[in-house]
Image (tube, rainbow, N blue to C red; front, side, top):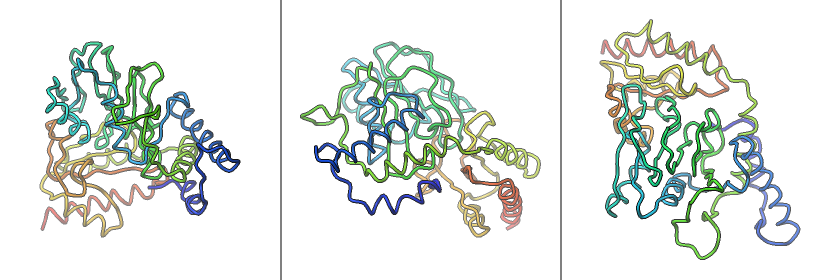
Length: 339
């Protein structure tokens, strides 16, 4: 869901012709100034330096650049069983190349069991999970760390030292197609892509989308947020009003994510029933929701994977909307269980 402040500007931003900000003419200088101002907005909200920020037109590319740029020949590769599929894909490539890999398990609350990681190794650390919203504690290892902030965004910034990190514009209600890659100035990161200059990323992003994302993050940061209250209401309602529901999300996680599995229900049927009632929910893995694949996150947590739906709460939601949704959820569950 795109932030209203960004929505109102998109048409205007796309209608303009944006000169190349690397050129020396006056119009290019003005474009470069706008881009610098956008970087300053992101730097402030992400608590990093402007020269540590790179923009990406394809967010998933940031996993490859941010992760493989930190790997050395001797590095061991540590990642968790609940990481995104893109991380698993990179791990598969490294495995074929002969790298030593370790998949870190999680407990039933989704807490990563870190183990012992040496200073020369690379640890992929998911700040918060995009399905359950559950937040990880800071890692204790003094190693190279890639922080996956694609779900947490500015709702929960990393509270630990990291060498590279990836953010997704959609996490602060910005437009899709904008990734923000942070490469810390003191890291030993090296560009893993073919290159013949000092550029660190392809720079194939849309300036209009970057500017819209900057507007979104500024407004999102100061917007009133009652989602924690709404999340608690939903979880309490489900616990009291609907039988046989496994709740994978804890109240201490991101306020915008809820994952539940309802016994005796086919998730796709419930999804369609709720859609008919006017509510959009998701099912299956957050990485592969389009093909309804079971959640590898819930499987790793040893939680039920059937009857699973995922809810995303937006800052614009009201208490009335949430109360109406809860009644619709209850009535549709009862209907489907009787059918």
